[in-house]
Amino acid sequence: MMKKNEKKEDTLKKEYLPPSVTIDLIEMEYGIAANSVITAPQGENGNVQTEWENEDDQTIYL
Image (cartoon, rainbow, N blue to C red):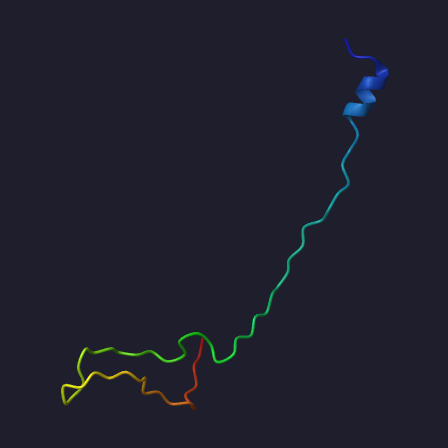
């Protein structure tokens, strides 16, 4: 059987913390793999292409 003092300790309420929503904005320099690339083992003349051909002024929409 509980005593009066024990019952009061069990009914203590915790402090209420309201929910919160946060937004993190991350800005990346030039993005990751900004241009898509099609890789081919050999180029037109049978040479291996080692550099990406891209346009620096290309607009990318996310």
